[in-house]
Amino acid sequence: MDVAEYIESFKVELKREVNQDLKKGIIAFANSDGGTIYVGIEDNNNIVGVDDPDDTMVQIGNMIRDGIKPDLTAYTSIDAVSEQGKIIVRVSILRGAKRPYHLADKGLKPSGVFIRHGVSSVPATDESIRQMLRDSDGVTFDKSRCLNQELTFSYTRNYFADVNVSLTDNNMRTLHLLDSDGYYTNTALLLSDQCEHSIKCAVYEGSSKEKFKARKEFYGSILKQMEEAYDYISLNNNQNSTFDGLKRIDHPDYPSEAIREALLNAIIHRDYDYSGSIIINVYDNRMEFISIGGLVKGITIVDIMNGVSQPRNMMIANIFYRLELIESYGTGIQKIMESYKKASIKPIIQPAPASFVVTLPKLETSKNSQLTPETQENEVIEIIKQKGFVTRQDVEQFFNISKYPAIAFLNKMINDGKIIKIGAARSVKYVIKNLNCY
Image 1: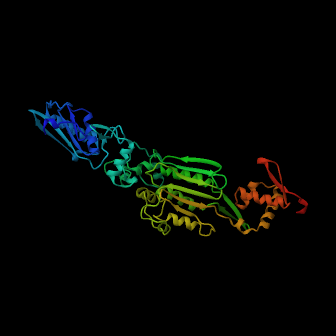
Image 2 (image 1 turned 60 degrees about the horizontal axis):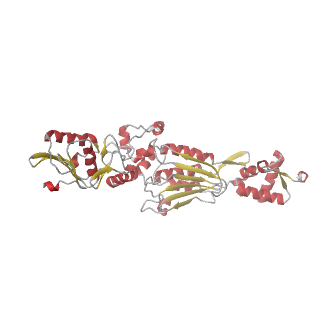
Image 3 (image 1 turned 60 degrees about the vertical axis):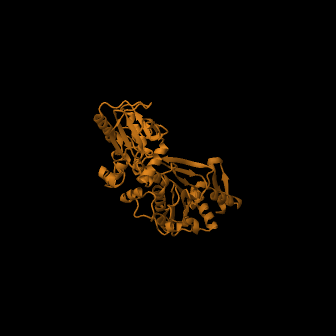
């Protein structure tokens, strides 16, 4: 190379001597399009050489092996070159196959990952790091290396222990929580205490979002989110009772199997490349489970209904199978539909380009569906005789109906002259208008 060609550029960097910045330059070239670093040349092209070429090459080799991860030795070469009677050291770096490369003591964050920008080696942004991970791994989100390599697994370790599954390093590799280079994967992130995703639940009054009763958000390992979200939803799955002779029969608002499968489906199949939360909306007449990410390419709604499954997050699906949370792939939607086999209204499955929505309708109890309007009114009269009054909430629970149908039912009885309303606001009660008639 002519002296005039020793000029810093996108693919050339000059160093007077070995220093810690040398590692940044090597990383930047490996993360970009490769390049060459010359040690023993000043920025102004003045060749000063190195005093001990062999020692310099050993220092650089140690830097690459011990200070940079993943292993970059196969993509670098170090040799000595004579120039103007002086010896300089040439470090040639190829574009690496396991980008992003980073400082071993900094990890996969901007302070540890560098790229080439003009004639400088600059910190990479979080987004460029993610893009390098996607490009170099060429795999799905759950198999990719995680940006955060400082993960803990308090909840997951306890959960695994409860089902007699160990979480040793070997098992973490088998479950793909660790990759072949010993990095935590995004599967590990999802199971860690540091999981960045969440589940949001909202309970609304009525059948619209005009007024909500409560909302709650769940964080941490997706196993923790799953358990806590299921418990919270179950609190809103009211039990209603009817009687067959002396036998009491309990009727939940929603089949517990359907709730379980809808929740698992949202967690296993959502697109974790996006940061949005899984949304669960609870209305008086339905539950909605909304997860980010439509159907996997090549799969149709007909395929889903027939039990065909292509998990977006295969590693997560495998772990849930190992934990016996799912029996086999592709059965979740079928189980939901089966749980409504005897119901007059069925769940609605709505895939969209960027979301997947499962809507569970509230079940109708046999009490409400079998009684005629006249019989229902007589039932209310009997309650009033026993209790002295009836409230709107009593009617809602007794006939398994929501607020507004209950109000309409009571207003009709008022208009028919059978009952009257006493009190105001929350103390409203309904009593028989003329008890002597009954």
